[in-house]
Image 1 (tube, rainbow, N blue to C red):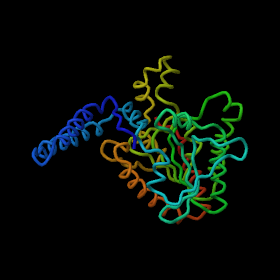
Image 2: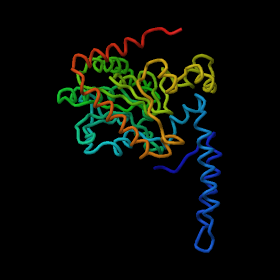
Image 3: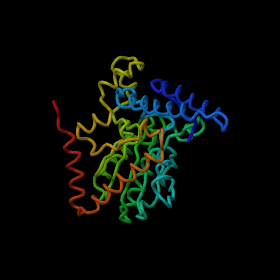
Image 4: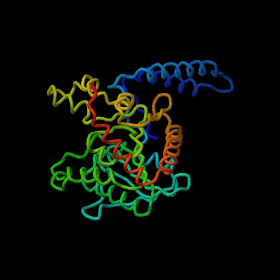
Length: 318
């Protein structure tokens, strides 16, 4: 994992953890500082619990974007075996902002697809900051159609600020690519599980998020637009992201209350960015349980329930 990065509201943790590191370095056979270290570690647990038990919506959005948060390839490495990445849309090129391929979940063949961000500057540019072009969505659809052909369940990981808004993307049919994915995913005849792992941004997220079960990590967000983008449109001031986040209500609890998702997957104390293996283990269990349930449904019932799920989302709530 990359060097630990602290958000502004995590700074009290940074100071305490720095002190633990200093005391650990000083501790030796001649100088026993284990008692002091234990006290500090206990205090860290208390402070971490206090911070993350009462995050604002804006703080949750910041956690969802945390640079150390596990990305799709991290989850693939921890949860799946025999992953073979497949490339290209067989039309224009290979989009590195979306990865996908064949893998095994507890020995069972599945198709795994997800957005992929980067951590350092070089990787961020290579992955286009997790913002796919049309060829990324067409690659995803090609893999989904392959999965249907071989009767493989589909698992998608959503983590993007949105589809890439560049002129080239629009020229190559960005809106059409997203719309086609929505239509085709709605009628695929194999189980589809969607996991919102970080940012679920607009149509860029929705293009791989039509599924039978939609799971959302505890500190992820899902909205039609980013808080900053919303603020820029409503108030011509992108710095009012905190105010916009409160209006958008993008957190897992908010979205579960609207009936858009089926389940919130709890994160380790301090967020998924603190403990990749623990987060992957919890998510693995949720994927296994939901997939086992979906596999019992007849194809006609599976597709009809998926259709009705999204029809119910169109109801207005006062």
